[in-house]
Image (tube, rainbow, N blue to C red; front, side, top):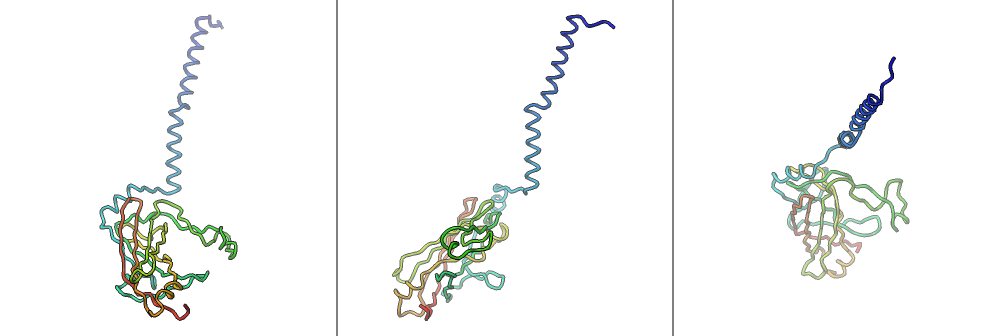
Length: 228
């Protein structure tokens, strides 16, 4: 068997380099891009796909509205003008009014409110693992809710409280069932000592991730209690 001469050997080496180059190309940048694309697709399928643009387009086809009310017996009931509302007591001795909102044409977001421990209240009142007095919105496109309260004859300064939240439902109709609109019943009693009921106006502004903003406000009567 004859051994290849120098020129033939060079041809073999050249062919080997060509073959080697072909192999490298198959496992080079182009291959890696395909692999990364496939991995990203698999990850999306496993985690669930969410598109802000898609949801915003769907919401844009529905008239954007919001109503203030309360959540009772698993249903939303809008506040009637002049409705009498008694503040509720919180676990730390503060007072608030339970409020809910019903919205349409809004991106409700996709996520959950997660309790996080920390701060003085959680130190004084230890919570079970994973619990706490502080909740944060984890997920896509939380809605911004801003509640404010104005009082009769403007004898009290307007108060405001902000929440990030996810609404339950879809772009056709969604709801936030329970938000704590804080009021200082002690101060109300000191400013309006002769009133059994104090006129107030509750206002809500809702802003979603699409930039859609809707508002509502209702006149209510805050019931004074003998406890304060």
